Amino acid sequence: MSFEPYLAEIEHVLKTARSVRRNLDFDRPIAIDDLYAAIDVAVQAPTGLIGEGWRFLIVTETDKKSAIAALYTETLAQMMASRGLPLKSSHRALVARLHEMPCLIFVCAQGEPPADISGQVGFFGSILPAAWSLMLALRARGIGTTWTSLLCARSEEVAAILEIPAGVTQTVMLPAGYTKGAVLKVADRMSASEVTFWNTWDTPKGPLSL
Image 1: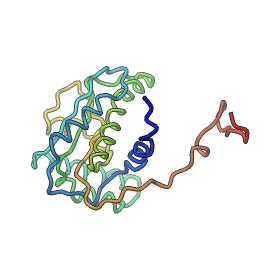
Image 2: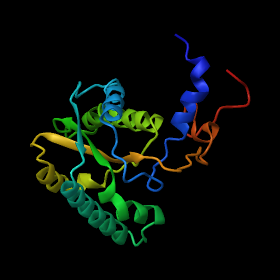
Image 3: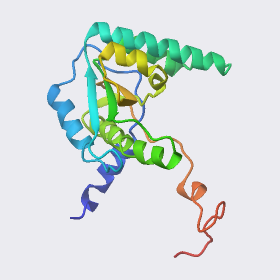
């Protein structure tokens, strides 16, 4: 099957899957059907070491969201202070209303990463594609998200709040809400020719085509 007739639409979703921290509808709950439909897309992602060991924990209870938001805010402030950097306006916008997000989605993997780098690449390479597919599927449904990973540093405290059992690895958290006037554009990034090498490192393709 050729997807060429839909190529422009597909690439538009891929190119405009920006982090959305503002212009969200904090008062509108996300429909369960939308969440399940997006997760159904996520579990079609390629996998390897963990098999189908992905699990998705959706947090909607006010007290749990507030506890998670407090942990996130504290961790972000500590990290930026350790780097001698101020909080960006986008960061301030996120932490100011993180507890008001309609839901927080934790993407988890059953099992723990191996000690060796190769095993870690295989482990996280089996769960992060699902998280990205989930972000894209939500984006296609008008739901904005932000890819966050800071809470991996507070995984024990998060596990206590959400009753996550031992042996489950937390990866990213996606705060999610329907977009409300958000304009998602293609970012100004380096072109393919600027970031691609051929055959040996730091060797750009010559002027001749393949």
